[in-house]
Length: 175
Image 1 (cartoon, rainbow, N blue to C red):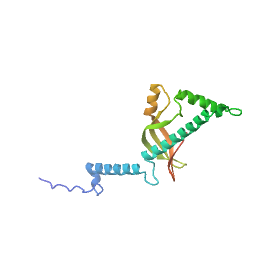
Image 2 (image 1 turned 180 degrees about the horizontal axis):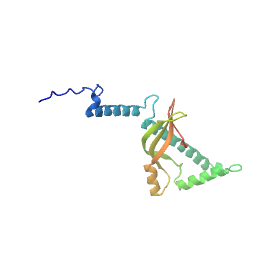
Image 3 (image 1 turned 135 degrees about the vertical axis):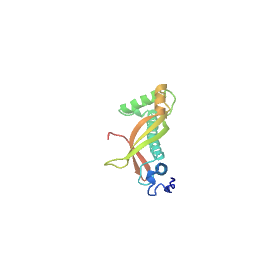
Image 4 (image 1 turned 45 degrees about the vertical axis):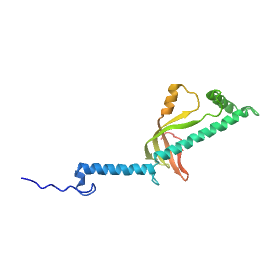
């Protein structure tokens, strides 16, 4: 005895579609693609996308580079020995001079790679706690094994807060 073929739902959202594996797979793929698009665009009010996080990370590195450049200029002007002297600045000058080993200029860092892992809404404070990997390159001599580790990066966590001028990367502290 032959049975008439049963009609399959035309759409993955049509009633009865949930019993059809292909429809469920299609719906899952559609939702994942939509979610990836939202993440890339960093929808208003949503968590930061990878590009947003990288931009915030690079602004943070730029702040460190600006501080190092300013300190190096103070060292070159001999400000560590003015008046009563500034032992803290003298130590920084010594460290920067040792790190740069006659190369001149200030220590500087730049991102070599960055990858967002995941974010979750921060509880009781603004923004999102995000896990990411980031690697940096520095113009300072490091042992090869250390340089490779720094360039490849490691998993880190920071809080990212949306501001009028973009996302801000906040220093990590124990949660």
